Structure formats: C-alpha cells, structure tokens
Length: 73
Image (cartoon, rainbow, N blue to C red; front, side, top):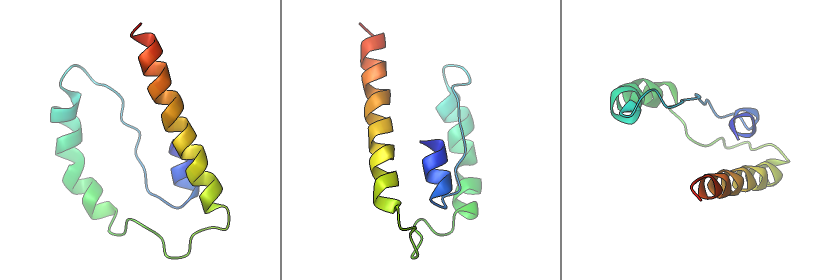
C-alpha cells in the first residue's frame, strides 16, 4: 500500500509500532510536520491507472485486516 500511494503522487511515511504508546508519543507529535509537508491531499491530474491503484490499495487493506483477524485466533 505504501508504494501504491507513493506512485500515485502522495507523500507518505512508514510508521511502525515503537512501544505501547507509539501513537501518542510519535504519531501525534509528527502531525504538524506531516500537515505542513502535505499541503494538498489530492492531485488534480490523476494518473490514467488511478482507479486500478485504488483497488490495489483496498485489497491491501482487506488483506491486512484479514491477517490481523486470523492472527488473533
């Protein structure tokens, strides 16, 4: 999913769990920097294969959710 968003022109960061409170300590602290860097959230000139890329992203999210669900069994 990271590459699909990147190839579509989005500026993305990878964030991995860094302890039990990583969202509060890392992600929330980075929010202003991320917001400044990403002044636009959607490109007006989308690539021709944008719809295919969005479908790939959705499938990636479905796979991630399924993997999480199965890991908890």
